[in-house]
Length: 126
Image (cartoon, rainbow, N blue to C red; front, side, top):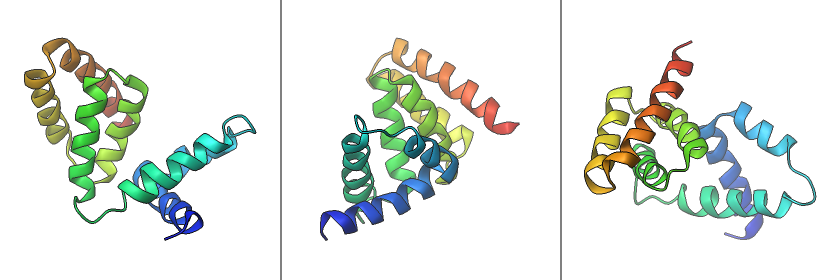
């Protein structure tokens, strides 16, 4: 696969996982300064990693939630809570992932992540 194919595959998966509205906003906000970064994440995060056959999307979502919660990347965590729902996780499964974070990454990380996830889930219910 060349870079163009990776970008195309990545954009397809990115839209499926994050939703068209999110991706359209990201693209609309892209300028000369951020264009290379948008291309990088589309090709590599989405076109290389999320397209690999070794893990299904539900599992990738679980891993992503745990890492983002551990690293306190709250905006990305909220985005990936929404993505996890699109990938078939239930709110209860999101909670289970965050409980796991509490044990292995610490209660403060999980506490913060639960707050972000709860607010995101409430927004998604509307």
